[in-house]
Length: 160
Image 1: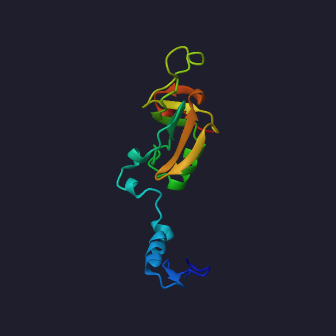
Image 2: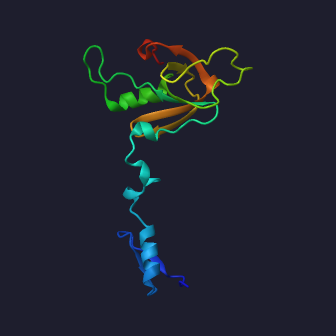
Image 3: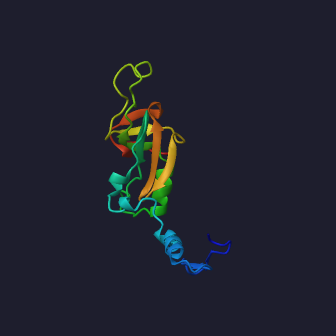
């Protein structure tokens, strides 16, 4: 049994200091702590590419990558990364990356063909879906009925 002061953590060192002489307990507790920089939810995913680590939408949901815009204007001015990030958050245009297994299967709601498919550029409402950040930008998961239109070129649509 470990006493109540068994493990304490030094603020600079992440190795526990044990009050007990039990070496097995020390090894077990010591291996449980890592520095905040080393914390990874699943270390097996580190070697996979970003595309392979993208979430798979469930049910009727669609994974959309919002359009970031070009890095350089037609006049040759380089657009800063912060401006491009803001534009990506505010955009209403995105690329359909993955489609959930039940998307567009409801024949009452979608009597014809699906409204979009993987690889399409689409328009959606500004605040539609769930937004989250990944390495490289923002991603949205939308419901299948939140797609407003399909387009050919994302540069044709100007955001407000």
